[in-house]
Length: 306
Ligand code: G4P
Image (cartoon, rainbow, N blue to C red; front, side, top):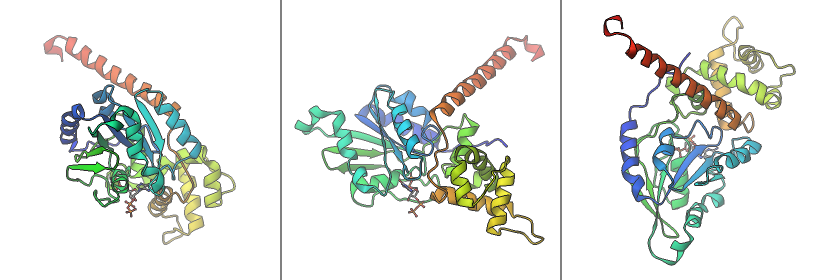
């Protein structure tokens, strides 16, 4: 199944970013550490140019520790980027964010000119939670549903840093179906857009190979099946998620499987690696080139034959 999803508010967000960017010294992009590639806003890279950027891999408590470090290193290959794995329960770390901003501009410590910082992030990455923690008061409303619209904010932080929160709802990658599925699994795309079964099958297919030991342990599975359907059936049998007649209720067990993943009950899991990102980027480029070639060929045909 392909996810045909297009966020309606993207023009507003794009306009805000374009207007604000020339005025800011630094950008903070909040990412989900479980999908540091798919939770990026695809336009930021283009618009930002050489403006320094702090990438926060938030929810790192839910992500694979080894991959957190691998992703930090990967993102920092760009010299205008500093990346940090953070999480909302480690408030000591989050409160260092203003200092991390100041570190980019040591010369500013001596003068009064504040450092202007724009913070952005696609829905549900934890941007509001982070803002509330660094501002040390409730500023942004947090909620578990993606795409809660918020009002424009300008927040003065300790250490001569002014934080601008972009109120428009940012969109994630939608040129790549794999990214769309992973976002649906983590809750980065609203739950009503993709069926629970589709999300659970996608997640199962990945974790039953990449995190086989965690799955075996959590669901007490001795021999790992080959198909996602069989894994969900096994889990359903163990958990007694049965319909009348004794068959496994796949919808119910799918929701449970997704919820346990989101809560981190299964263990610390990251859904993508830099290798996957490079492979998928190449795939998307190939698709775009094929589309462009098709369009060009159509245009080149004589008018009457189109
Ligand atoms: P947003 O502004 O980017 O849309 O996200 P928001 O801060 O509203 O956070 C979305 C959900 O993610 C919230 O959970 C929040 O508690 C959770 N969250 C944020 N940061 C972290 C983190 O570092 N680790 C973990 N494990 N969770 C994090 P919720 O269930 O929607 O709300 P609540 O019941 O926790 O308030």
